[in-house]
Length: 185
Image (cartoon, rainbow, N blue to C red):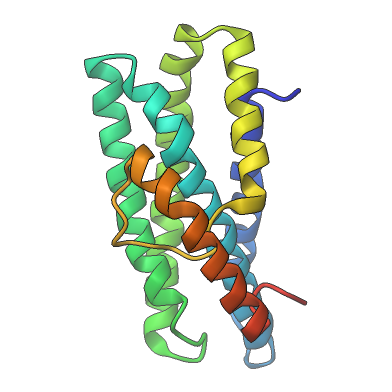
């Protein structure tokens, strides 16, 4: 069984690889591929952030004032990212605003990943047992199948709200994705 830090690291590496591809200058013939890659980033980030808000950040918050400070900053960054991702999801790569939003998101996403790995992971790693880390990793890994695939910036980053509303949002997201072909090759 993989622990929470390995699960999150794999997600981070996958997203960083997609961001690196998106940093390449677009060409007129690559706009469709760019759209699909952006959709994939939105899908993966939406799942990742929802699961962190349900499981990871509550565990960090339980560590007391320092955990609350770190989780508060991280979830604030994630809420801002959801706003941008929701806007990107409605734009085409041929629109000027798309590239502006995407460039800002890439910078912010890299900053958020670094913050999480450098600030949140060490304090949680020092406070939980290897067994707890594996259990948390399992919850996040298993949750990917039922996590939302779209950003929901108006949903508060609350464990209880997400555990209650998340499955409904995820089901609606998956229906919309199936109807539009979003996220499929």
